[in-house]
Length: 635
Image (cartoon, rainbow, N blue to C red; front, side):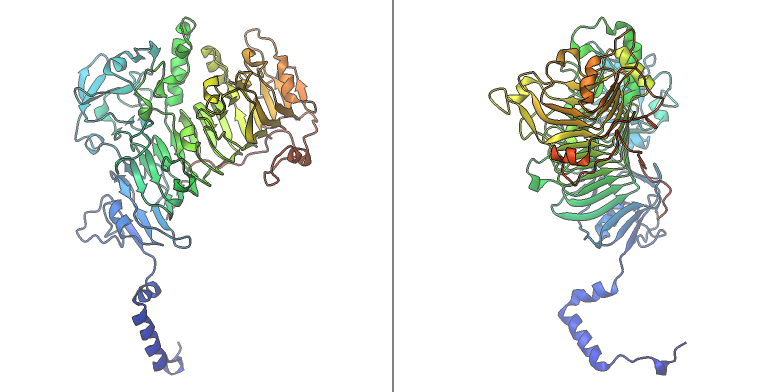
């Protein structure tokens, strides 16, 4: 040990100078002597001396910790259920972010819920009003956006009569065999659970954890907040927040789990149940008023069992489907859309046409997430006015409509390295709101796979969706020009180096009239196995399209159908068309049959920016996706 005599003394002159500096800058003393704090939160805390500085003296509400935290601090949330609507009013910095984290990353370990507390805690019970129909009710003063039974998402019916019939009566359209309805005259919420107990252990909601959400926000789509009860966590200020949110299970907000008006936010390792959307920003068309530089990674978003409900309905109704009149009655996924079928439904603010994100601004990154059993993956509501968004290395599975939509105005959108399994139509370019048209859009290195079970499902329904939905109805283009013109996608739509296998489907769902051709579309270096090029009625509409260097093979014909020789057009001059039908057992280890891929130089000359990667092979490379929350991370 060093003796006192050998230590270097602090000279009295320096002491005086240092004290003078602290007198001139009193805040400097705290910044030089105070470490970052960890604020503990525990829902089971009963200690009257709760200062949040240890688990033994933890706050019992998360909001207390958020109010105490400063830049660089960590809010550490211990396991439990937190029925709170949270607001973060402070900012971090790039080198001192605020961390709001669960003490352990595990599903349902830390739950932040917007559900009605009396119903969720079972202090308010359900009354059985029709034993044969398993119909229950409980008092409520608003129409909720979502009702969950042990995290099983129930279908919203327009009226109690619809719920009793499991049918949208106005349209004579089949519903699903569990759901809820709100009666505004009685201020009562009604539910019916599946009689076969397929998803729940009981048909009595009193036996389950029932999560009933608040009402939606305001505006046509119910996506605009008008108070604090529309999101689990609100960041309500402009500018940079520098916040990291990690490891939380979010449940039943009115709009979004995390709603940020601020920039520089990271949401990772989170679960979203009963959330109209996972992470959202303000609904602004002005790029200066959006939430920017938001990252959503390693999260799980689901509306389970939305996809399985659709599958059940198609299989149950197959015998009468061919007798239905009108396109709106054809069996698809209208039940959860909100304003369908045929103008029926509960309305857009209660609909499911949302997805993981809402109103993305500039430079959002959505990566390594698992989005499954949902109506949409990332919809027009999420992406319409985005700029430079990157949607990469996600797993989309069992999606009723689209994995990624570009409408209406997405600028410089990248969709790359995703695994997309059993999605109705993976990609969509369908602007519905005039200019500016979405683009450029880069779709590359994705794997799209339709399982044999889903192939059989859509064959039953008589609906054969495309890999890319493109175009729009004539009245949409009237917003762009008074007379028919060639619609040039700004910067181009690039579909390249993808592996896409859809036995019962087509490459394009082509929506445009022949008088409104679309140009600047490039389909190159893809490995495609499918049934048709386009619907028969659209064969004369595909013009001004660059398709080349693709390996295209016919899928197995069904019910005596002939091979669609028009698929050869998609292969292009330098590609290869294989007319012998064949569908592999999986998407891996596909034979490229010796095709010479398009060179980097050639595709760059066609307009692809040099900073966009391009593989020197046909189809997608091997994907290394770690999708969803990375569990069991202790803090």
